[in-house]
Image (cartoon, rainbow, N blue to C red; front, side, top):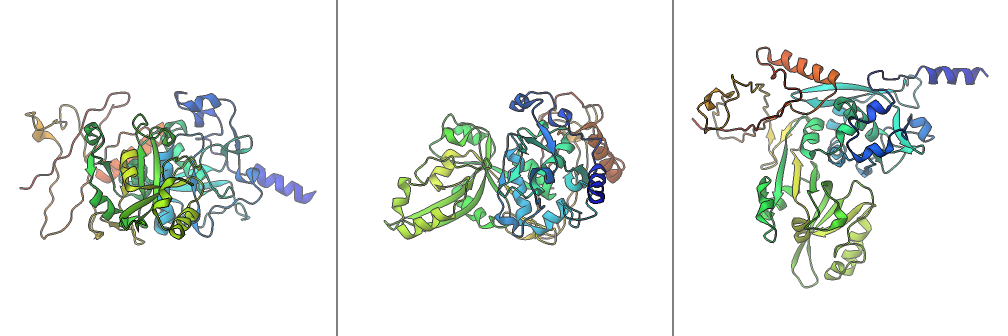
Length: 429
């Protein structure tokens, strides 16, 4: 009886987050996504109510697959793979030593860190998670007793105001938020596709792509489908995938072929191309090699050749590697970028929003000087603080920025207004 009473007291004292409650206000924003069909059906459970022995991590984090639920946040889940590749980043985003479910000091809460506009900010949540039928309905690990991923997703949703606010986004944005670094995005060039595809961003040539893939063990490589009208319908629309591996192989004929292993966050196999299980593509390889490659794929993974890859996928996104000392490495030279600097500014209508070079007001745009004393690599990235946040977090991030910059503040009164196009020019003087 005394033991039962103690358990009830512990359960009663578990932390409940008043700013991100276990209710529809934390799930929905304006009911404008397919998530709205589950209104009133989602319940909230703690990990101990979902499985008997919940764990935060596994012994080998890289073996754990991230799996998407009914929330359209594949872009965020692809970026989470960065934490599986770097112990430094994992400890930065999910600080170690936090009491979990087997600890007497467990209080039902966890703290995560997210990089926001030049600063790491802490987000504390309770561990009540959205469920349908007693099971997690948003992100989860393929190994169902692991909970680092749904807890991090909840912290990210809290930062943005609701889970629904995470519906649709850019992998590059999430990579910056989870690494504090830089992400690069390219359009995949395929001579057989319309030139319209090449207008969406920098075009990535195959030779450069092969060189970049040498960094696949150190950073996230994600590929995206923008629409399926011209491609394979089973890949979906506006969906992001993870590139796991790339191999240079010899066919039976002696010709060279590049194969890529792709992971779908949906967690189920969807590809019906020549290199699917039982596909005709495997006849081009030695049977022993083919059998070995087929044995490597897990649920949700599939192989494609390089030609298929450039034909079916529209974009590729890569995050700059971050070493175990927390230093950024170049995607292009693989060298450590030892020095970094955040510079804050603002475009204010009538003062510093000078527009493009065609305008006489162009010189009024914010200017920053960089003196290069010796031959070296310089990476410059522009980040605009334009994403939607909960009212509480928008104020906190703004205050952090104001404290850091002192004299430069973000544009006031921009809520609800359309953002104008911005740009970045680098001039040698």
